[in-house]
Image 1: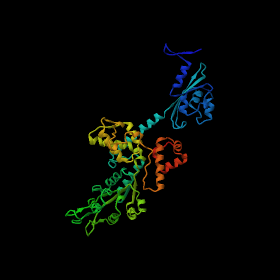
Image 2: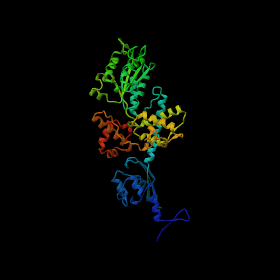
Image 3: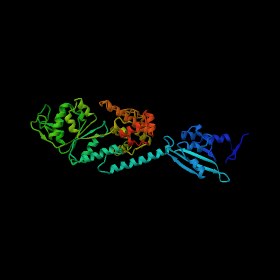
Image 4: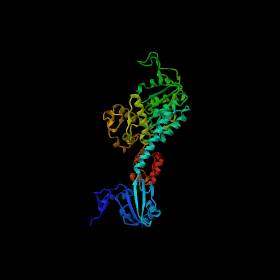
Length: 476
């Protein structure tokens, strides 16, 4: 005999099988207990959300199960005992999930609990979206604060590591001392050098930047120190001031100092120690008053060991040392940098372009081997080449250097970047650091990271602290 249940539609009656099918099709987990806390019904979504197996609870007493498990007293048991609806949110019971459980008792005519209907919903995605929104609002607030602060205008420093660098640089700027800045190409070494100059007592004097790797070796000495008239064939009749004299009273920024020829290093050392230079062809030195800020993407200490860089010059330059981490190690800076460069491009080209959420997420997941410089040039090209006001992934052209950006969301985030001139122990540490940083973006707990990387949880936590990755907001 088929039992039919009436519905609100006069033309449709549902069979028990059809009602069961509706019950099973619910995306939310549903658990039904009787007045003794015995499990009466449970759908597959409940097991999907909680991670339990059917044999754990199906047709068993739920009170006994909860007392002997991490769940302890649950919302369903509370509703059974109090005879009132109970709602509870669990953040830690279900691996990597936030689950909201609502339990409602159904009473009989005598006021006894006949059934308890428990409904559980996976709120993880909603919580993540809320956290992303809060983080985006926080980043936007920090971004606009940085624009209003005259001491940080043009600087985007959201990550704690970059903030610490600029905080220390502000202290150093007031002291006339030599500074060495290291970091990969494109991380913003010149930005930091200018920041030091603009907050120093030399701010009204020139800031002269020299790329030591861009000037031919034969011309470096004359470009650095100048020459007297007739010093060599083709020289100007009245001679020429060098860049050191041009920067007199100000700051000279020696970019890519690691490319400086060995023969010129000793002359640079004398300029630093004696505060004077000698023009090519001159007999007497010329006094100069400059502050030196040097930068390189090379391992100068290793170059010293290999006799490719003077040890005395290295220690003379390395009085105050700042190392700027690559962009892939500080992804929280990517979105505010995008906002800054996009606004800059909009003003320059008279546009009003906006970044879609998909592009922002893709940019945050990309490894950016060219660092901030690559990000800036990419945004500029997107603004120039796109048609609509909103920049989508489809706005990215396949022409020229943009080839390969088309699928940013599929970018090779598992790619490892190391300095090939580094020592093996340093390379091993850098690889460990990058693997952990990538795993932390994919997984929400140290247990999951340990499983993904093949090391134990204690080691994961120790290495996260060792490499300063706490800022990635790992849920421990």
